[in-house]
Amino acid sequence: MLEVADIFRDYGAAWREANRGHVSLGQLKVMSAIEHCRTAALGGHVVRCEDCSHTTIAYNSCRNRHCPKCQGAAAREWMADRGAELLPVPYFHIVFTLPSAIGDIAYTNKAVIYDLLFKASSETLITIAADPKHLGANIGMTAVLHTWGSAMTHHPHVHMIVPGGGLSTDNQHWIAAKPTFFLPVFVLSKLFRRLMLEKLVAAHAAEKLKFYGAHAHLADANAFAKFLAPLRKRRWFVYAKRPFAGPKAVLAYLARYTHRVAISNSRLIKIDTKSVTFKVKNYRLEGRARYTTMTLDVGEFIRRFLIHASTASATTASSPAPQRPPTWLWHAKGSMHPRRTPPATPPRLMPTQRCGAVLAAVVACTSSRPSHAAKLRTITHRLGRQ
Image (cartoon, rainbow, N blue to C red):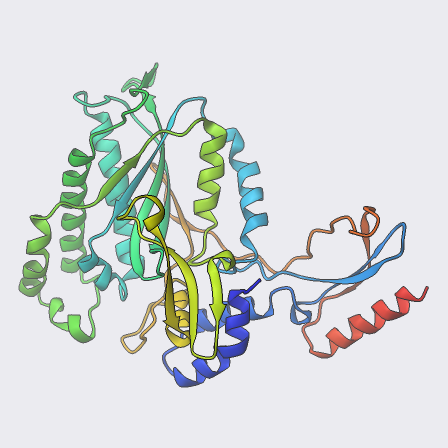
C-alpha cells in the first residue's frame, strides 16, 4: 500500500532543497519521523517464534503525532483511558468553524487564534445551555481542534462531544436534553460570532496578533475593524449532528478524531514523478457524488501536509507553509494542554503467521546508525540457522 512515508522518502529531499530557508524545524522533524518510522533508523528487535523458530525483524515506530501509521495504537490506548469518564446518556456532536478570512490570519497567529476558537466555542455552549429558555443546566464537553479539510487545505474548526444534559444550577439533579435536539444552532452561531469577534478585537488591542505580507496593513486598528466588519453580518457555521447510539459509539468516534492526521495512507491512490492522487470528500454533496479524487503536484501535496504539522515556535513571515500546534484537548473548566509526542517504542509482537505461536524478542538494537540494518539482518540470518 502506498504511504505518505514513501512520498517523503522519494521526493522529500528535493522538496526540502527547493524550499530551503522556508521549512521550519518542526516540519523537518515531522518529515524525518515519518520517513524513518518502522525502519532500522529507529532501531528494532529481532523476534523469533517460540515454536517453529521463524525469525524476523520488527522495527520501532516513531509515534509522531502526524505519522499515519502510528495513530491506531494511540487511539486504542486513549479509548481505554477515557472509558470510565463517559456518562450513560445520549451524546451530541457539534462543530464550530472559523470563517476563511479569520483562517487566513490564523496562519501567523496559530497559538492565539486557536486558543480564542476554543474559548469562544466552549463559552457559547456553556452560556446557551445555562439559559433557562433552552436547557438551564451546567454542561461539560470535550473538544478537539482540526485544521484541515478533506483536501488538506487550512480549515480550522473544533469538534465537540457534549453529553445530552447537565447539572442543575444548584448541582443537585440532572437535567436531560430532548432525545434528538440539544441546542438551536442559529442561536449558537450568533453568540459564537459575537464572542469570537470580541476576543479578536481584544487580542489586537493587546498587540497579540502579528501580520505579514498581504495582511501587514491589518496591524492598524482601523484597518482591522474594517476587515472584521463583513464578518459581523454573515452567518457563521455551527453544525450539530444527530446523537450517538451510546457511550461506546461516542468513544470510538471521538478516538478517531483525536488521533486523526491530515491524510491517512488508505486515501492515497497513486503517485508518479510529478503528482499524487488521493481520495477526497465533498461535504456539500450527498450520496455517491460526495466521494471523488484529487491530484496535486508532489511538492504541493507535501506543503499541504506540513501546514498542519506541529511546531513549538511561531511561524515566520517568510514561511510559505505554516504549522499548527499539537492536537489540543479542551475541557470547559480546564485549560488547553498539548498532547506531547512520546519517544519511539517497540512494536507490539503479534503471533507468527506460520504457526500462530507468540513471537519473542531475542535481540534489541536501539541505535540509529545505518549499519544496524545490516547488523539486524546478520543476526536474523544466524538465528535462522540455529
